[in-house]
Image (cartoon, rainbow, N blue to C red; front, side, top):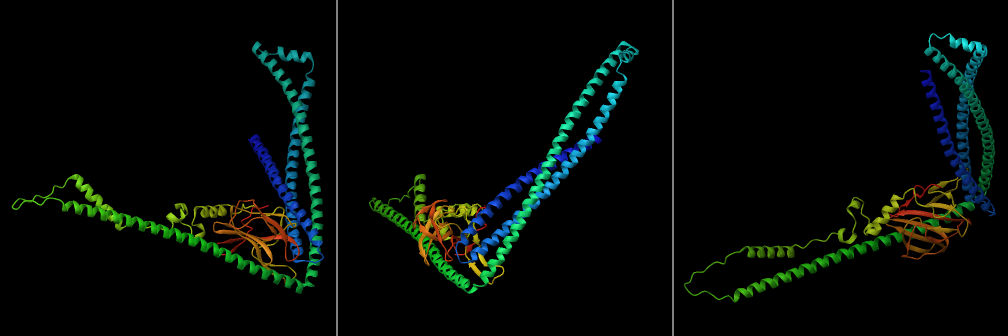
Length: 487
């Protein structure tokens, strides 16, 4: 029973060590990701500092730095906690090994003492010849051999246990060194966090002294945002109207085809009736007083009559064309969706569904960009500054390639409010790429995910970056963050 309990304890101990190792690997990956983000933020902040003007973007970057550093410190805290658990489990393991080793040494010492007391050949022979029978003597020989082998096994086990104990002590020592090193990193990050907060306070103080200038800058951005929104709404309305016109043209064509079919059927029926009438007029009339006989109805005549009736019925009630079937080709799987003219073609429906299925997995439009202004209304702690954004403002060096995030069709590529913008349609969804220094695509061009649309430019506040937007067919701006894959 005790052996089973001990075995269970060992299994649980090893399981805890394995789980800790896996969790620590995840924490290491998370730390590396945050450290990479911090390095990018520091680089971006140094670039913004080259601009003599203190900007809202600097404050946004510092805020991001503080949040990232706090996340890093939390990860380090969890790592220290896991190291403490690992150290505790290793200390338990070392304690167990020492107890086992002590027990083995006591047993081995007893066997050595016994062997020493019975080391003479006389004692050995006396033990054998005192047997009551030959079989008993053989059993005693076997016992002595197994006893010698047991002592050798005990000695080997002691050596192995001492080696394992030595290794465990080495692992424990490394764990403690790693814990000490991790605590040093944590202390450094705490110092850096305090420096970031002081820097944030300095930037806030500088921004307060120039709130009038910054408010004007924000008003200019808001005016520009509204102009862009109006232009985008006009493009979306134009696309919807064009889709409706295409649908109506297909519907009218289907009606015209049905009318022509009915006219052809009516003409064929009239010709058949006239031919039948002419044939009846040429039949010889019977002589006076003769018996008039009724024509015999045969099976063939019945079938012909029924066929003519069916033909007339078809000509009277031609099949009515529906809006969706001939015009859209939409499969039955998508008939439960709310109707959108932009999904009235198989291609439009497919692009919409693909865009929706890639929610949370869309690639970022720029590489190594940092979001400096999030979606919606943004406020800045310590100031009265507020601004609204219809997308994500992503800071990147001027001239960085800007790529399309999904397959689609360019519906606008040009200048709006003194800034270049590209608008791409993905079924009933649209993605916008604003503040481009140059445009590499044109209207009606088919594009794939990853297609370079242009290069990033300089925003109204003098910094490099782009504005990335997502809209639906109601011209409602969507928060891009849940759509984009996590970095």
